[in-house]
Length: 140
Image 1 (cartoon, rainbow, N blue to C red):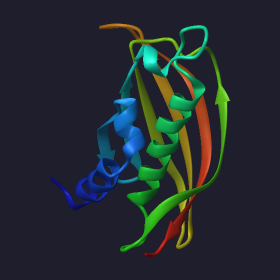
Image 2 (image 1 turned 90 degrees about the vertical axis):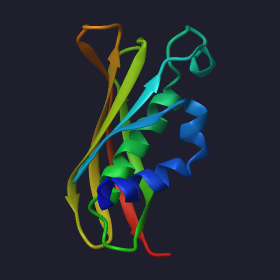
Image 3 (image 1 turned 120 degrees about the vertical axis):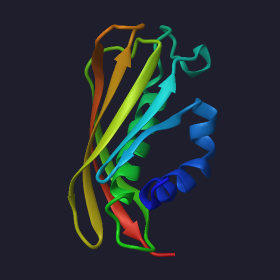
């Protein structure tokens, strides 16, 4: 396991919310992180689709962890702001949040993210949400 993966995985495992959502790290690379979440009725809204809160949570974390891969040594990340657009109802059997770093400096990282909904085996995905986020690199 690479140092980059260990850095992200250690922080991800410490998040209670990701455990509650049933989310898992699916991919870690320099500047890009994927988080997968299975659909659960416990995470649904009144019409039976995945709740916007669960969708937003996984893409916020994917963006944050993507930023962590580019953060200065010894820094952690926290979200300063984000904007999310929901493109369509979050219907699917599983969701994949993809976070990517657009720009990273000494103090801030700007990221883009998307959430893909998968309906079943072999099916193409549909993008259900897009995010732009600013992450702050913080020292302990």
